[in-house]
Length: 367
Ligand SMILES: *Cc1c(COP(=O)(O)O)cnc(C)c1O
Image 1 (cartoon, rainbow, N blue to C red):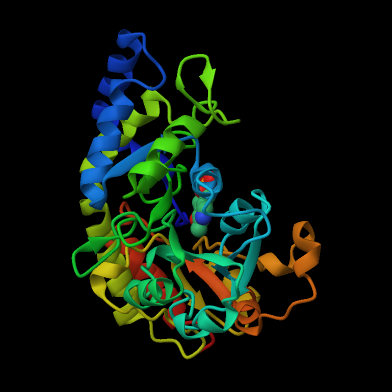
Image 2 (cartoon, rainbow, N blue to C red):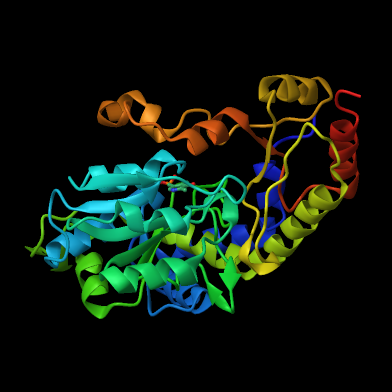
């Protein structure tokens, strides 16, 4: 079976350096909010081209805390609205609703799978405070256009970069386009820790100051609490691991692009719709998604041919039991996407032979 993602193989590439990092942390006797985190935060800020990085416990916390931070600053209030794509992973929407703000869902483009900027302005009301973009599957949204709209209506731009570490446009990376961004280092992401992990990146001094306290019980100084904060920290061990893996992120992206370009150039089945990419540098291929009218049949055929695939995602957020208040809405583009998408194996450790086999199997489908 060709695995969808081989996390063992991915991490064993760095076995020596990861082991060394583990020993360094063990010997230091310091496990939270120390040198390793500080060093990762500096390295990641440099990588993304932002002023601040703050390590947190996971990607969902990163997004939730950004909104919470704007509430503490008096910029957002409960009941305010945030625009978010209707086909995103549930975490982006949870971050909004958990803060008692209202997610306003806007449909994506059917071929890039990213929020359609031409539909955004129609959804802006007096209560709209921000646009949360999601660089889904690893492709940067149309950020020049999103930022133009945000500027026109005086909105904050929050980026969900969980799938897009290193994606860029005109030399500017994911996380550097908006006012603040949430990043995930969940093990399966392109930059994955060996546990849950996440980070907030931001340009703004005041926001960073608040967030630094919020992630640590609302405290800047031990046992003095200025906010009712949370405990959401990226631990020293995983910060050390991420420092190792960050060095190789550009190589990882390069290899994923090679796999993606082979899929794009060589898959030729009328049953399969390939993704549309706007610029090479703006897609880092967290996932390679195809669409098929008879998705279940294709998935069964592929698994019968020893190719493992997954579905990202089978149920759109507005159809989830957790969001009964959204169940009556219709988002036909999202619904088509959720009905038809299938994720092919994609990673930096796939061999050329594996990629060839997958292409060959798909090209023989239904012939
Ligand atoms: C993975 C993911 C998240 C959440 O990250 P966690 O670290 O798993 O909490 C948020 N948004 C998107 C688009 C994701 O893919």
